[in-house]
Length: 470
Image 1 (cartoon, rainbow, N blue to C red):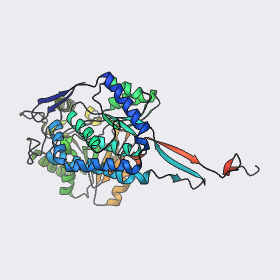
Image 2: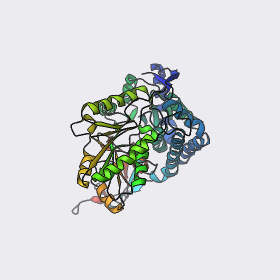
Image 3: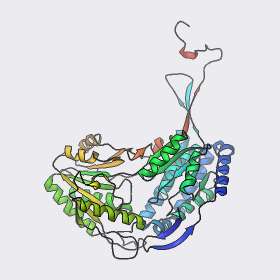
Image 4: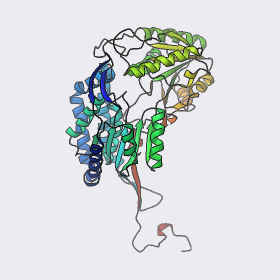
């Protein structure tokens, strides 16, 4: 595993970073353990909040600097890079503001004297992907640092400058040494970290293969894991949905981050054959209007894929779709320019026996379906091994809410593409993983929910629940 920055807009290698040596990894683990036991868990919530909110303020103050790392390393358009910086700051602020409330002991009304306390459990390992380099960290670091855990962070190998920038951010905000540690670790080293008895949990966003390997290793060591492993999110368009605004939402849902988004719209499902034809025509027009270019240029509307590997995987999937009977309505080819650019692509005629029917398309490629009724739409939406997000567009919001209950996913948005915010729980079901991040749910994933039960001195050994004949 080589950590290096390759500019996806040019294909040129910018910098290479050495993997952490085994001895340095041992030192990092020792320091994290010492920080947890002697410093961080003993800090007041107020003191932790000052550090995390300072990190948020620094992100905003240096937003252009931090956004530039995203554009350089994964080709994110400048406005989208700025949006990610702001979202990451918002998440840090959210937990700095709300941790005091979340950590209040909760009285158990049915048992007087009983309280539930949330306490940190120790060192956590975070394994994060390249598509949202800061956001993916913030949704782990915000809640887990505020609860009093400490974090080892293993980032994707193609965004090392972004990883280092976030690590500097936490240090500059005032976090003691060992509270947050960036690791350029190998797969073998990651395995040893998971098995280290001082590490008490692991959270990963990544592929099904990586998630299964991490869950297996964590399980053998009796450690909790939280996994987010992507999705094949459907966007269902009912016949009463307004055409133009729904088309705009479909384009945004599919093409944000050049389609490299786990909750991006992957499958467009339109109810009604005539409506399907109208919607496909409008969607093709919008996709064809996208302009490839330098992601630092504000006029660019189509950025590069993050890596040549990502580009080649998509080209192979497109070829597979065609071999198995699918049609390419537009696009399907690499753009003839430096860097890792793919034409905006729409696939049609994807039948159930086509492998693409159940695969995730991670880039500027959408599959399009037209069905005759809502039941078919729901069945198609659920005909996937994934279950991360989904969206429904309709003029009848209450009807949309009822249909949302029938979709097998962790999140359903009505009249909006699937999106994320600090206060909204994020996570999926089926092969999309388990556990939740963000909101109060994310705050409670890696804590000791300790029961403290107090009864008056001199009480029966049975306590207040003594049998009637005691």
